[in-house]
Amino acid sequence: MRLATAEISLAALDHNFKRVKEFAPASQIMAVLKANAYGHGLVAIAKRLSSADAFAVARIDEALALRAGGLVKPIVLLEGFFEPQDLPILLANNFQTIIHHQSQLDALMNCDLDGMLTTWLKIDTGMHRLGISPEQFSKAYQTLSQCEHVNPNIRLMTHFACADDLSNGKTQQQLAVFSELIADKKQQTCLANSAAIIGWPDSHGDWVRPGLMMYGVSPMLNKVGADHGLAPVMRLKTRLISLRVVKKGEAVGYGSTWTCPIDTIIGVVAMGYGDGYPRHAPSGTPVMVNGKQVPLVGRVSMDMITVDLGLETDAKIGDQVILWGPELPVEVVAQCADTIPYELLCNITPRVDYHYIE
Image (tube, rainbow, N blue to C red):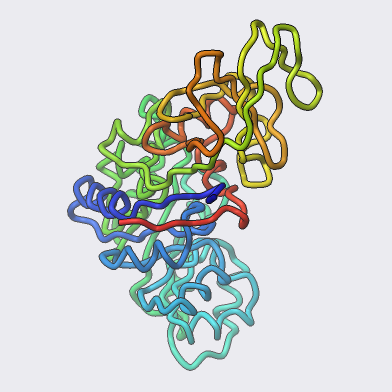
């Protein structure tokens, strides 16, 4: 019996990539594959995204895994490099690097390379995480331009803090800061993540970098993927492994945190925080059993959750249980668990079996 399985729909991935193109038809697409392609499988997803113009990952080990998997497209390191000794590795593997700090500029100026690196100069327009400050931009750009180890076609980037909220004016402020700074530069730009691709078309630039939306999940507040014409790529599913009658007043699970209000049948599901299901999901979080939505009850255990099936259930041991997927948006589960869909998708553990389907 196949138990905890992440079923990955490659057809849905294709559909979502086409939606990115429809949202930003004039932009090149940098497909974001960090964190194991948001929990969907780094190399398998990359191989399917043959129409992407480039890939983006957070760190060099992810980029090397793509090269080891046979991927030859340009790869952008969104966190850049961390040590000067990384630079020959970047050059040998045709990795492009974000430059976001003076220490990286110093390393480039003092390195000894046999070629030139393609760089993206990241400007902090208000996120206040990574990036050169607006006051530093002119000097940093000049330094990169004068570096013999840097391709003169320096690309320019920023990141939005509040693009998921269309009522927040900060995105327009950041866009204005960026536009003013680069007004006299004839270089390629990349500003828009998934939320900006959907909600802020003025930000699309020469490149867009879709992440969450490629996997069929909404990056916007209080929305689900279907609201944007996206299709969920992952269906996390498992099986019922036990059924038992529990009487009114009896408690279920660790800590006895949930007590039956009436006699009922409790289903035990082979899924827990050891598989990546959120331990803090409360009683009442929806779960799908045989196409019917039922509530999770009691605490999430390492290997199991319990659900209230009701006395009239026709469920039996071995029946399919869906934790999230097309039938139950991961955004809904995340909201119940007081978290975000990014975390749920990225927390899938290695013991979950991946099954890629057309």
